[in-house]
Amino acid sequence: MDRTLELRWFIDGPMPDTVRDWFDTLGKASKKERSDVYLLTESSACNVKWRSGKIQTKRRTRPPILAHTPTGFEGWQECWHKWSFGTGDAPPERDDNLWVPVHKTRQQIERDLPTGIVVKIELTRVEAYGEAGWSVCIEAESESPTQPLRDALGHAKYMWMAEAPDLPFSRDTSMGYSRWLHDVAGYPLPPVQAAPTSS
Image 1 (tube, rainbow, N blue to C red):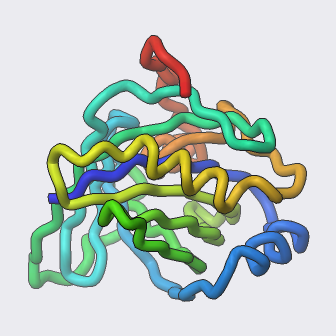
Image 2: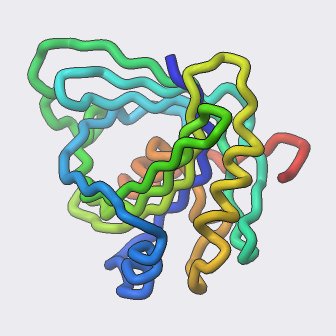
C-alpha cells in the first residue's frame, strides 16, 4: 500500500503552448501514452481503474483541504491510500454506465527527497467520452504509513509552481479522476465538502 497527497487540476479543451513551454523548463520528464479503464463510481472519494493487467484502487482518507500555490492558484489537496493487485484478465469491456476508457499522454518528473518521500509533477493530455482536456498534478508519495507528506508537497509546490504562467487553476477545476469523469459524462457529483482547515 502507498500513501499519496495530491493537488490536481483538469482543464477542458486543447493544451495551450504556454503550458507545454512552462513544463519543459521544469526538467527532464518521462513520457508515456496509454489507455486506462476507470470504474464510474458514485463517490469522488473512491477511484478504481484497470491498467496493464492490474486493478488499482485509491481511497481518499479524509476530506479535501483547500491549498494554495506560490503564484496564488487554489486547489483541493487530497490524501489517498493506494492498492493494486493483478487480475490476469483482459480490460473490462467499455460500458458508459460502468467502465470508461481514458486515453492519456503523460509527461512526469520525479524527485527523491532526503526524507525518502518521492514528489512528482505531471502534465497529461486526457480524453474520455470523445472529449479532450489536460491535467496537471503535484504529488507526494510514500510507502510509510506514518511519514508526513504535507511538508513534502509544500516543497514540491514551491519547486515547480513558483514560475508557472497564468493558468485556470482554481478550486472549481481542481479534482480527482472520479469527479472529472462524472463531469465529462454529464453527471456531476455533489460539491466538495472541505476539511475545516486550509494550507
